[in-house]
Image (cartoon, rainbow, N blue to C red; front, side, top):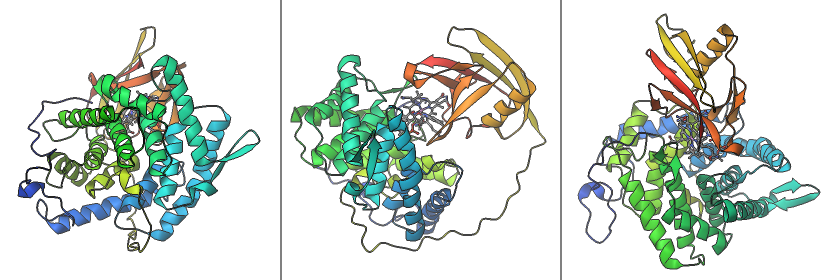
Length: 441
Ligand code: B12
């Protein structure tokens, strides 16, 4: 995530006391002033359809974030959404169940699952998870997971998972009407005031956004907290940090954090309408086809419709639209480029030893395809990946794991610049040097 020069923040109106200029007025119907209606609506439809199409992918685990986004949208395909909810209740449910049985932290996924159920107005008290012999409702498990996080924080001063997931946990409990203990909220409020949420070397705008939505939910629900002034101060700090993260091209953080950041600003009462610079940046990304990954689309689509996760709080699921249909997709045969590009790859292990490789790949190959090719050609290079909601996560290189339990990961950079996409999404278009470095965080 590269932080570019800051620009004027006039497009993110923070105060409601002065009448905002015409372009900052809240817009109820999509595409009235900044874009032609047709352009705007066609793009929304395309993104909505891409998400719906992603629900048909049987290869990966169903993703609760996709479901939430579809459910927060204005257009629906109720049959397909119902089918996806059922898949979440079986396959994703089983995945959480087995993580719980292995005693691994699961707060983020559990929170997203709860929010997905809530987005379909599902009765949360009827969904149970089993630990040992005991079967308890999902919300009870989420509360217990948050207690574990809190206890861990008491001596290590950071969550078992990360602040993004800790915030998701608070948000899911709050949206479900569960009172979040003041000890738990205090730890996030304290962190928002005194900790720098980091992702690699940059500020984690995604984490700020999730924390902002979680704390705003508590404020709106008038949840008792240890110190009300501190809650307000934390919210103001988060808002300011998000606004300060604006780059010259309008993004808040980068193209993949802007959706959550806009959601958070909307939730926190900022007037971020369709003409606001970050929203324009999102539209322009969407128009240029920057978002292929369904997880990315799921985080920006609510923002493009002026919605945030906080809209799940009072969701009623009544009289919903049912007009979203999927057009038949023309079968496009994959074409392999005849142009080949040279990639230099450096692997830097935890002890600093480095290994260098060269490989020629067809232009347009993904980094994952390039690594597979290298593995086939070089006996001394091998790698492993793990599935995640964002796709394959590089977990092991040349027999060395960079484990999250040790707070290490394989950081990936191209010509010294950290990638903003994972190994499957990042495409090699030109000759470059890829560095994969075992890094602590
Ligand atoms: C925390 C975090 C990390 C931590 C995760 C460990 C931890 N316990 O804290 C660490 C530092 C390891 C990390 C690494 C990377 N991250 Co990161 N990460 C996040 C963050 C803030 C939250 C993820 C999370 O906890 N989700 C909640 C749980 C419930 O979902 P989950 O899928 O089970 O979570 C796991 C995966 O998301 C995985 N993960 C984390 N980052 C990434 C990135 C990719 C591409 C993949 C496939 C998986 C993955 O780790 C999570 C914890 O186990 C997200 C922000 C966001 N908007 O989602 C960015 C985010 C997902 N990361 C991002 C990126 C780019 C990376 C890196 C590629 C950076 C780099 N240049 O090396 C690497 C991954 C490299 C690899 N080895 O494959 C981007 C992805 C954008 C995209 N289009 O793909 C995001 C959206 C941030 C951003 N706005 O740029 N990340």
